[in-house]
Structures are given as C-alpha cells and as structure tokens.
Image (cartoon, rainbow over all chains, first blue to last red; front, side, top):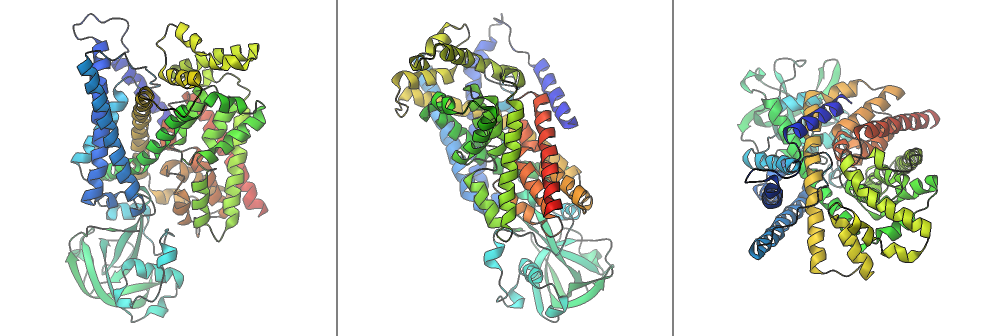
Length: 282
Length: 339
C-alpha cells in the first residue's frame, strides 16, 4: 500500500512538472505542435527500440540470461511485430507529411500519464537494455535466495530424468535430478563426478568446502533458483573466490555437514573456466 | 552497485517475458474492437449482477491472456458499457480461467488434480463474489480514472436512450450523439460507427486499418509505460527483500498461506507459468498455501497493480486487493482444514 501511495505521489509530481496545456500557447512552437508532430515519432522510436532490443537479445544469445528457451520464438515474433508496427507507423506519418495535412490531434486517453511520459518510460527502458547487457546472476543472488540440493520441478524435468547417463558425464543438474529421485547419499559413493558451476562460499561450511552451483530457470530470471552440491577441496577455498566458474573432477562421498548427511564431491582436480555462454539450466 | 545491476537484469527479464503477452492482449482487444460488435456482446450479457459477474468470469475462456493481457480487454469492456460486475469478474478471473493456464496447471500438477480443480473453483468464486459486490455500484465511472471515465459517458447516455426507447434500430444510430458532443470524436467510436453503419463487422478497409493501428500503438504505449513502472518496483523488491525471509516465515497452515500470498504478489509471475514456479515449493509448503499462490497471484500482483491503475482509482484497487486477499485466505485455509 505504501508503494502504491509512493507511485501516486510520483505521478502527481510528474503531472505538476508537465502540466497539461491550457488553451492555446503563445509560443511560436506550441504544445499542439509538440503533440501532433513530435509525439507520434517518439512512439515510433520507442516501439522500434523495443523491437530491436528483442531481436538483438535473440541473436546475441543474451535472451537465455533472461528467460526460458521455450519463449524464445515468442520474443522474436514480438520483436518483429514491434518493428513492423513502427515501420507501418512511419509510412503513415510520412504519407501525412507529404500530403501536408497536419494530423488531427490524437485522442488523449491517457489515464494517469501525461502525454509523452509513457513513451519516454518505454524508450528509456529499451535504450538502457540496448546499452547495458543483462548480468549473469551470481553468488550474491544464490545466497539471497537460499541454495539447496532439492530441485524446483521444471517443465523439462519429466522428460529428461534418467539415470542412464554415465556418472562421469552427468552435469551438476543431472546429479541434482538423480539425487532428487533417490536421496540416499551412500548410493553414489565412489562414483566419478565431473561437473561445472560457479563458486558460492557458505559460512557455515568448513574452510575447505565450497558449493558448486548453478541457477535453474523455470520461466524467467526472476524465478531463477539456485541448486548446488558441496565440494571438498584439497586446500582452503580462498584460492577460488565466489563467482569463479570451475570444472570439478572428483569422486562422490558422503559427509556429515552441520549434523546432516550429505552427498559431497571429493575434488581431485578443480580448474577455473570462463563463464559459459549458457550459464543457466532449464 | 551489484544489487542495482541485479535489479536491472530482473527488470529486463520481467519486461521481456511480459511484453509479448501484453502485445498479444492489446492485439486481441483491438481486434475485438473491430471484429466483434461489442454492443451486441454486451447486450447479451445478463443484467442480473450475480449471473453477470459469473459470465464475466467465464469470458476469460475466449481470451487466452494472462494478467498482463487481460487489463486492456477489461478496460475495453468497461468503456463499451459492460456492467461493472462483468468487467470486474473478467479482470479477476480471466488470468486463471482460460485454456492455456488450466492446461499449464494440469501439466504441472498432474499428480494432484485437486489443485487444478480447486484453483478453478476458488478463482471463479472469488471473481464472481467481488464482481457481485461491485455491481452495487451501477455506474462504473466514479471507480475509474477520470480520463477513462470520460470515455464511458457517451456510451451510457447512448445506452440509456436505447433502453428507454427500446427499439433495436437505435442501437445502430448512436453516432449522432457522439457528433453532437463538443469533445473530439473518440476513435473507438468512429470505428464502432463504421462497423455499425455498415453492420458488417468483418469488412476491413484502409481507414479501419489505420484506426486499428492507432489503438494498438496507444494501448501498447500506455500499458507498456505502466508495465515498466510495475516491473521496476517488483524487481527492486525482489532484490531488496530476501526470498528466504518470506519462506522461513511459513511452516504452519496459517502463516504458510500468508507467506505464499505475499510471495505471489511480490514475484509478479505470469499466470501462464506460475504453476511451474510454485511446484518448486510443493515439498516445503502445504497444499493450501500453494493454492493461495495460484489463486491470489493472477488476480493481484505488483506488476498488475500498475496496469490496473490505468483503469481504476487507487482506492478501488485497494478494495479489490483487500477483498481478494481475505477471500483467498479464508478459502484456502478452509481447504487445509477440511482436506
């Protein structure tokens, strides 16, 4: 409710800053000119930017940092439709310009935004998106959201759960899935493990332990859910700062951590790797 | 700084996910404007408030849109003179009572079909009840944002004239009323006039295409602006309030329901995918609280409040919010109690 009040205040302030024009303006460049000539182009600009942003995300692969691949086509189509909309609009406006007739003022049916503000918000968001690339979520988010071994049931889980994958080929996600299907850690003792993920330091674990983690996305980055397994290192974890991406080779063991029996990767080898282009699991 | 960057990424993620659905909703509602004779649709709506809100809740079945897409449709229904009960029933139920969402919920909860069934029943019940409550306000205008309310005026005059004379012919000649008014003729009305005079809703000439485009761009601009604000707020809350805090809060029947409702409002996830999201909590939380998430989330969340502000005054949204929250709480608690 407080947020709502703040929003209301914000909008009121905006309204005060941009009062609606009362009658005719005496300036050479009137508000009417602004409404009828500039604003339509501003709309075109905002739509075009959003279209470009979506198409850009799709083709640079940044889209997978934001949403689940199931929606890729939807986003691409939306981008194309937005670009097409701005194209048709441009054509219309140009035709009007050539005819010389000024466009009759567009009907204002703005409800709470003064004219131009909504377009500005859209345009600013799109331009910011075009300039600043999305971030790969990292250990701070993982800690905030609470890292676990239990799996959010994703859409893909039903199809892809299988224990037929050889242990050394299982990804971190495969291990988590297997563990969810059969949670007894002793069942996996001495199986080879070979996983990649990013480092999370958990204070409650001893000095030579870290969590190797991945984010799982059900729908979009908003619901990214961290999963991970504890790794026992030959030395302290200080050489691997949080957010480092590691390739861990080792064997599975069972350890008692914080009074709980857990599956732990006993690392034989840990190598730093670059952040993969597809950091999330789906 | 890192927090800000996280929030920005989440913000973009919300927008990229929601804009396709918003566009779909806008395209649908604008197409509705040109291909469906809403006056006929609305005149077929039952006038009985209870029945009206129930029918409104079920209309969602015709429009497979989530909560980002149903606002433009509900808004259109209201300005076209649909009874308040129908519009509010639609607004609250449409994100849940539609084929895509029901299918998605069923896919997610195949093992627990009762969740699917009760999600539908509770959503229908709450939407119908709230629609019914609001039907006591016959004239929707005082509830709505002033600018939007102005657009309803002509319609109501037209419809009261129509009712008093009770001749179907007048149904088609509402145009002169609009021309008489001093304000610029609203474009929907022009479009409607075009449809009505020709009385062939399926024709599609160049002028109509222009009007269609105008409507689409206006709606995208306006609702998009709201969506940007709503997503910004939702993303900041996500980053500032640790999700663990919300989760630790709820283990028993009552607080788990409250926790899930807060989570639903904060996460602002689209109703087409929320079933998959909530599955993640199915081991730690009571079935009642999962239901609370699934019923409450599509009706009210931070992102949607932004969009609803384009229809209603803030006070009305607070009422909607409060009543929906209480009903969800009581219903899901009684579910936990009885099953």
